[in-house]
Amino acid sequence: MPLFLAIHVWEPEDFKLVGKKVIESLPKLPPGLKLISSLIDARKTGGWCVYETENPEQLVEFWDKHVPEMGKTQVVPLIQFFPPGPDLYKILHELAK
Image (cartoon, helix red, strand yellow):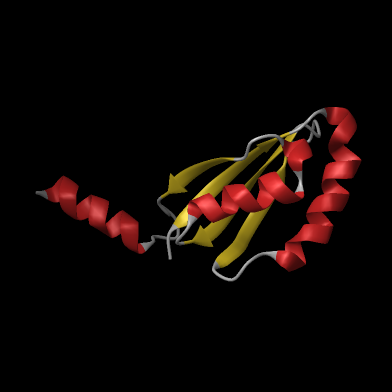
């Protein structure tokens, strides 16, 4: 399943509210949206989360609806480099041509 990086940004004073809403929202993730990992900026101003999904728009809609304090979620498609994922082999094959 394709991987996507969700980039979230919030104001430092909203850190506790955002954290609370995220924890409350995670059990409500829709089918087909799977959280793989999550990192929070030590300055408490943002986070980066990796998801598996076929529908990145669903990811944006979910977080914009459930935690609007994070602002507009940005989504970036990812290719897993290590451990090697299937998309990496496709790129290496293209490079070898």
